[in-house]
Length: 251
Image (cartoon, rainbow, N blue to C red; front, side):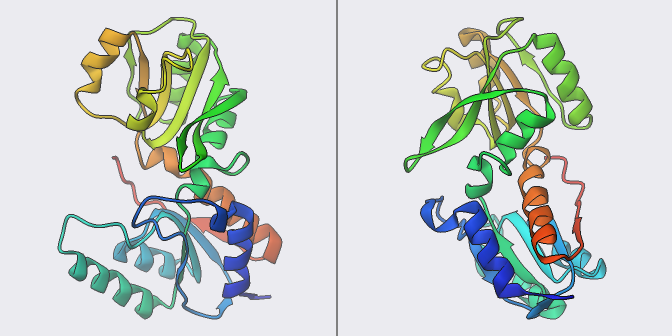
């Protein structure tokens, strides 16, 4: 039986605690566009975009969940980008739901918690507060060689390693997507190892100076987990199928 798009959006709001979580300007979490009222299939993707909307529609998706919605400020002329995306949404009839920090920080279906679970790491604490919400997790340490092997298995195309820290780290930090905001907090947490999506060029020298192990494994690749988990939860709640829409983003 088809499900109602507004009921799905409300379910996502409650599960992610959307209304209680502040986010960066442009995130605009929640239902960003209401398309077809009846939903027969749910999709998940990391980023909103005209091409993604077309791909989802071709796969029969009516309700698309993304991590990065359509209102982040683009490099291209903003009005033009939004016009293209809105036109694609209207053409396909898709409903679009976005969840950014709520899907980074969630202790069960969030990106960071799921990265830890995938790597067999035990979460022991959370840090890097944004407006009072800790968005990154700290895990019990394991040998660096073991960690590197597991990361290579999970991120074969995007794995990178900068290893100037301990061979047996006591703690391992995880912050999906951009990891810059976690670096300044590592010393206070007595942690020298960070798994993240992306860093900046200058962080190589800083890692050498500070004695850090840094593992940037792809912004996109580290942020597929939460949208998949949220889509799966929706599918289970409303008895509809779901599918992840990959774009092959290498960044």
